[in-house]
Length: 378
Image 1 (cartoon, one colour):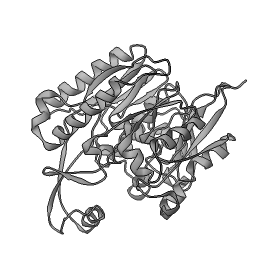
Image 2: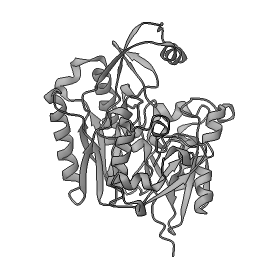
Image 3: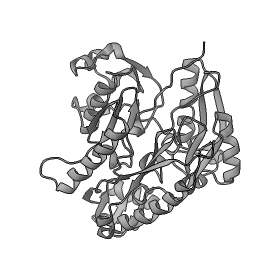
Image 4: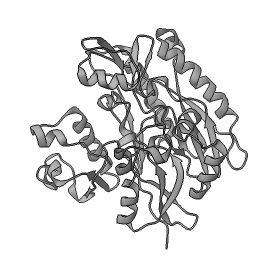
């Protein structure tokens, strides 16, 4: 798990983001052991004893120092693959730091982060399987039975010069025999865009925001409530996008020619943040060719989704957004999502946590977490 703790070091306090991370560690380590990835030992005051004070069993955590690393660990970090013989390996995707550029023109930050998965493989003494495909971990979704779902718009943008067929052939190296191509991600997961009156930020269409496998034969798809379509341009665009994706998923089959069960999961109402543009914000907007000036009032939206959940042994951690004083529509959406997860995962504990602090950056809980499957090699 990626871990952000700079604020503890600098100001001796726990931020809202760190509080969420701590709660995730507390909940997940009750079911599985966990490796926490940090850049250096100064970021966690007191070492493991800090976690003891937070009510976390330190026998269940292993602190893993890696430099450089990334809070959004799933994206540049290792994607694990298990062979038919039960041998564990790391699928080495190329990493471009969310840029849509050829691999030979990536920046220095991407070059440094591109080595993270190789570093993990070396520590675990397992092989890497080098891929030609550039993609973040949040954009790769598989059912574990030879099927992957890819967002065509994102994956092709990340890989100028590669065709869908070439990408599919490359994926065969890691046991993916078939790719289901959907057309779009969420509009509010764009990498810097104005939709209607709102500015949206995100990774550019990651699958973990809008389409996930619940199991090898069931697909969850983000869906706009019919009553909310007309409320904003973002809802209208998401409605159109998800309906197009649904048509593609309804025609998709597994390796045996069997269609998937598709369950529509409601999108939570997005939340708004209005700020006066300072020099840092103006610089960020200018990178995306948006006309913002010092002192302008800008309203940004959260990229919130119930699809950005964590699934592990015995436990499912899902987003929830309602709190006292908020509109009942948030509560109703949280409750509807919870009921769906309870039906799907009746054999697991389900907890709800509020990931809004991560959503402002276009991320979520799933983005800072990467499961390592058990090797079945004997």
